[in-house]
Image 1 (cartoon, rainbow, N blue to C red):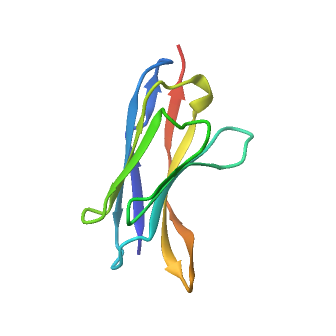
Image 2: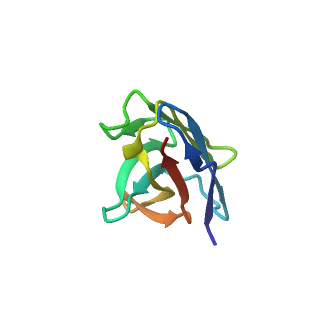
Length: 120
């Protein structure tokens, strides 16, 4: 029922910028948290940034000061502004969303991913 669709990936030179967007549909509840994860070939999927419905954010140390996550609860969208991109940022980027489960929450919903390649 719930679908997350990412867009905005592509090829960019080192030092450049990209803006990723994720549109959610099919949920009758506002997501408690939404976020971005990434996975490079041969590596585990890792956290990039998360944001709660109240606006609290969390970033991986490797992207602090370069990436900014934001969301619009009414529109069910989340975005990731990526500046000063480095070759190490090359990965498939996935949008994720979490509903509350009991007293906690779980990222049970994932998008199909969008490729970001940083190369000269």
